[in-house]
Amino acid sequence: MKKIKTQALQPGDTLGLAMPSSPVTMETLDRATKAVEKLGFSVQFARHFEHDDSNFLAGSISSRVGELHTLFVDPEVDGILCLRGGYGSAALLPYLDYSLISKHAKLLIGFSDITALHLAFQQKGKMMTFHGPMAAKLIDAPAFTVDHFMQSVTGNRWAQRLQNPAHEPIKTLVHGVAGGILTGGNLAVITGLMGTPFEIDTRGKILFLEDVGEEPYKVDRALTQLALAGKLHDAAGFMLGTCRNCASKAFPKGDHVLAVCERILAPYGKPTVYNVQAGHGDYQLTLPLGAYVHVDATHQQIDMLESAVI
Image 1 (cartoon, rainbow, N blue to C red):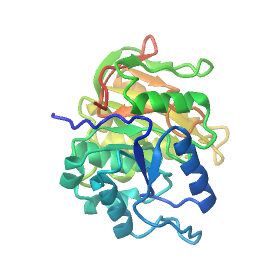
Image 2: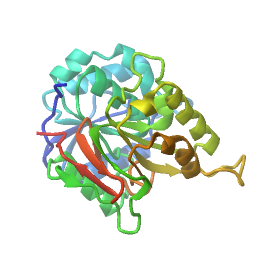
Image 3: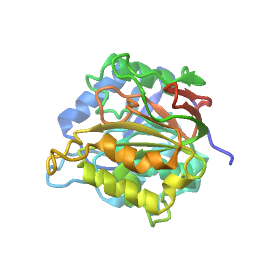
């Protein structure tokens, strides 16, 4: 499958800040803007923001779709960085013009609820995107997160081995080696798209999964749904990211998330690593979705063999 790669970013480039999901406060908007500018980028917006704490969405569908279209076609904008996740980007998918977006392809960066956009852009627009920290996440982010973000979006980190912080080693759940295109993101968002034209395609791919604030039984339900749909059978291997605040309150003596993953994923016998520091943790790797990745689960090694940018 031919993939569309976008131009790498460079200091001095302009990042369009987008809010396709939930809103941020004006204070967070100001701090996030300054955090991005501190990295050497200029910032541009496609619409006026006024925080409305009575709504969990950052505007109407038309305003959020229009924002993305405007940022993609604007020649002054070099890449698009989402301000935050939250909830709501899936509702945009039927209204986005994927031909227009792919014609003006630019790097899209975000995670969590932005998973819906990643999957749609990867499958409908044939684009490669980055699962990485958003503008609000870059506020007071640890050096590990910022450094990996900058090395990734500027094209200085590719065909290289992913390295967790030394105190958070990648671990083995199922031994073996596998290679494939990297896809995935937030587990709840992925399962929410099942049965739609935008459901995830895992055939021969390395499936990356992460989540936040989900009870183990909800993770069980989501993985079971993927299993029943054949998505786990179709995948070549699994990368499990962070699952922050996922300890059970309802069943504190019951299974934890890792036990759930082991029970459901291990029987497939596919190479599986966990504790990959990507997702809602304090430390965050930037992952090139759509890139070819090689996973050696036996030796806890993940090699990105392809750059998402040119």
